[in-house]
Image (spheres, rainbow, N blue to C red):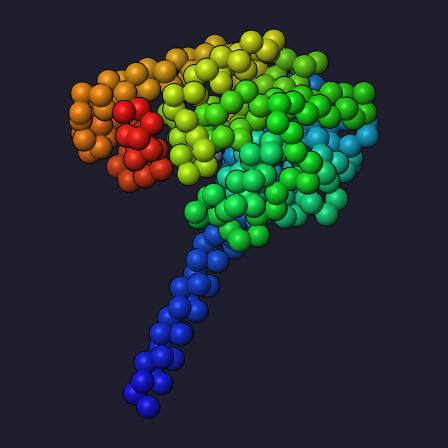
Length: 286
Ligand SMILES: [Zn+2]
């Protein structure tokens, strides 16, 4: 009797834990989103997850990224405020659920495109805290994939590792705009080593992207900015890499390197940088 009561308590506790995890991961209340016009027919939707780009054409809308599943209704409401065209394509910049979580809703009516590595990272569940229902792209590429719709063109390019091993940048050639995904996000890089990221290769990857002809940048997170800011971000990635590599080659411990990253590059204690990036950096840069 005592044993069965104990078993029931354990089972109930596990069930409640499971519900709580599911709730926090996929049932959070929708956040308020903001729509900004970037260039003619190109909009950026900010808030909650990664920045969405929406390119309106006479034959449909091309999206870059789609935030979390719970943001779907608000993304669609924002798009409907500027066009009645349906979303036909979603380009997923990388596998993280704050950029690809909406795929589960868009897959019914739109084609989803990503690098092969980004698809594999979703299929192989490389993001430890991702919701179970992440949907990978049906169409993949390794170097470049172009979408032509309604007389307009979008180019998704893969230039190498950085934030993950599957980040593409998305180029709007007629508008001279680049969506960088999380190759530019916030003030300081997050290297996802479990997802194949590389601090050593990141600046090199951005060098290739910077050769494109653009003046406006939609970063993965943060406000729309310009090419000079992307170059400054790239230079900071290189500076951080050199600083960390110097310390690691001097034999400094992970804790000591973390303290310098906090003091000089603004890494917060218990941040994703400290948890996801620092242990991998100790291996990659030694
Ligand atoms: Zn990311």
